[in-house]
Length: 127
Image (cartoon, rainbow, N blue to C red):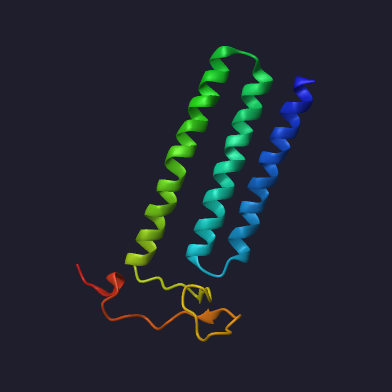
């Protein structure tokens, strides 16, 4: 029974990792790719470590898997944020802005192109 539970958890983790791989090709810009992959990889790898902890039944392996899960859950969002900030500072503009962020009118239901780059954008500065 434990093998079945561990297998199902590992399968769920593998599915999330597969979705992260698909997101790399489907998202239009670096920010979408970072958002989708950082969340999916964090959850997928955490589920794989949970499956290893369930299947092993060894306190040492379980402790290492829990430590790995905690490390992933604490560092992966930070890494995604740092990469997104680096892309922003390098001048990478978003390709699409959601209608709720920049509404174009009272009845606007469509996403709009991103606004043109601003001259004071951090990516336009020289260091």
